Image 1: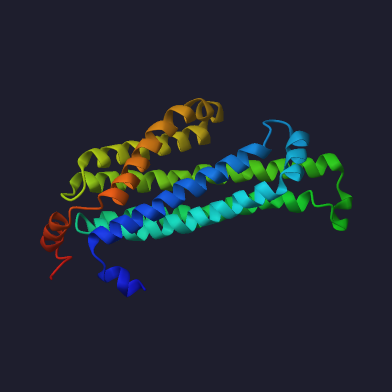
Image 2 (image 1 turned 135 degrees about the vertical axis):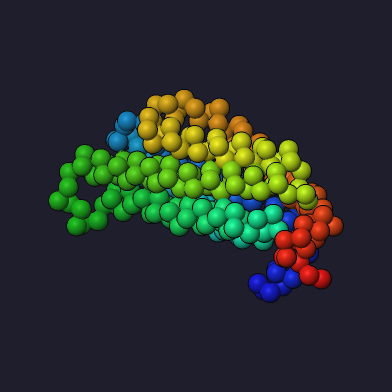
Length: 245
């Protein structure tokens, strides 16, 4: 299968990458919705009640996050291959940042599942009081949020480098590259703001989601509908020594 993908036309690779990126956006958005339904800021008791009341939704959210991660991995590899003719080293670095983020992500998903164990009523948990168990469940969800800050930083670096590579390419529109670079800077800013000052991060989140959605949405739409200019891709690939046929 990998050989077939490697031999496929650049336009097919681009459209396949667009499909996987779209799946990432859709499943990731559902996961954010599912996770947001259970957390009540600063209230461990209400959060614990929500977790128990919406356990299937929470599990679906974790499953959606895993699917989103797998789809993003596939999109990363395809986009790396598409952008190699621009700069193999920078395209590889962008893929490295994405793979690093995807490796950190499952740690956060594990923290999302931990409250279900803590609040599951197992006999060995009877040594803890109800209040302690609720506090532990809330703490695990907060750790999951902290993990998301870290892996979004890697995704921001990935998006920024992709935007830069598209700006230097001859086979994709520069406006898409500019929007992607802007989206990457936005994700980086949001991650750093949440890391250094959570109130500032919450304030900025709405304003940064918009350019992020514009950047990733425009790239996804372009890859799905147009793909790449195959002739220009081959010309740039030949110049870089990435295409000989």
